[in-house]
Image (cartoon, rainbow, N blue to C red; front, top):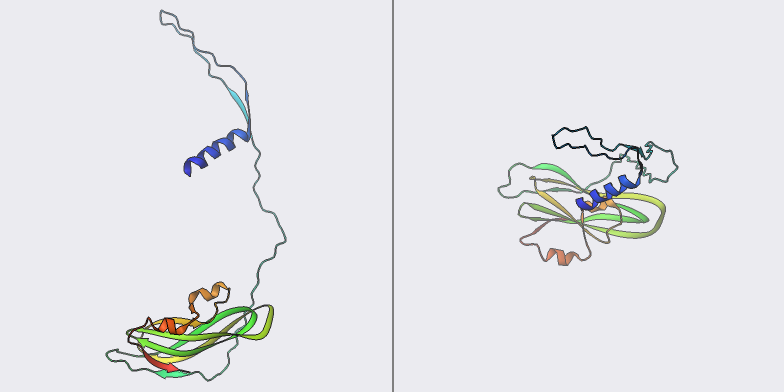
Length: 191
């Protein structure tokens, strides 16, 4: 690849300039007595391509997202977990979010499973009949958990919306297939 780009640069340099020879080459004259006369190398007059670099103002369409966050007092589920040999507990707010377009959706945390030092937060994403038009909407649900510091994995049952924000969670179509791969789990919360 480097050889190709080097060859391309040589071709570009040769084709983007005008070369005119001004003098012809002349070899030095040599006498057998080793008297020499100075030679002359050819000279060239080279006109390079004129390159101008700058900026240009153009009208383009760019996406613009406006997110308005309001603070509202709501009832949030609270779970207090005591695990053997776990040490201190801390209050964690487990939040699941999805960014949707086209149609409104709901998202709800359905259950939380504990397995060794991991928590699996299982949520369900459902599409409603209400259309959004060209708007995007971020939806969320949360549960407050008083437990030792554990590794949290979010699993969302439903169709993954086509938004980059949603890449942070694992989406599955069938939760029973996902649960069949888990060992020694205990349900610590269910809706």
